Image (cartoon, rainbow, N blue to C red; front, top):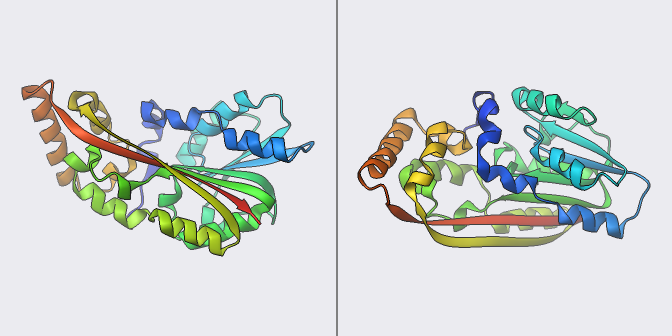
Length: 253
């Protein structure tokens, strides 16, 4: 499977408004702390990127005593995170071989990143190792097998071929977590709608969506030119678009 070079998109990563999901209040973290009152919590954002999740959760949970941690494989993404957040412990590393001690964390968030892990089995082993008993691992991602009409795949069809190589199906995620001793709850939020092509052209031009960096330049340019043609000649053109998000909350037994 190919790997996204985040050094090429780190500077424009946060410009994508569709990353707003990472800014939402994490109700699962709140629920965990309500059920497990402690004087101090250790929270890791795994594959933290530019620190979007942590930055906003710090504001939501400013009344709690939380040590925030972030780990990411991209030094360029971490540089941006470190510039924004001074009281967070950031580590450059990979999910498959984390430097943390056993049972270090109460809660691990993992947003839109699991598909990037080259050895997903090893990453899950590490997640289990560094979680405390009854700790929570929350994986939030798109469910590409349920969204074959996504606008990306409409204009850049080879992108789906690349994503199939990177994404596990829901059942595989559920099974691999369960066999490791996690108690797993999974939900998928799905929507089907018509979207205006012109509203998405800028996102395609920015090429900051990871899978667009993995297809060939020729495939990318062909899809982009098709979008531009449609917008120029049919300004009101719409297409059917579907989108699915997976929320998987797993408690370590």
